[in-house]
Image (cartoon, rainbow, N blue to C red):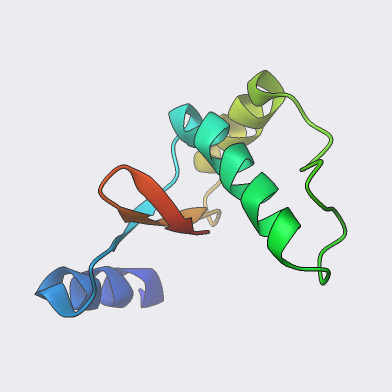
Length: 85
């Protein structure tokens, strides 16, 4: 319910991005985004090397995560560019 409220709120054009549910096809872009974030902060358990996982493994993770009853993996996108996760 909270996610639905946020989605409805973001659709009112108050922001220049949309909150969407991540799909397995987003894996490559999520990992690329993670590399950028890893370069910009020292508050994560990884750096520019990203997460120690392949694109295929991450696709499988996202696909399995979508199948759970309570799992929601959200992305903030501006057009086709990930702005947050």
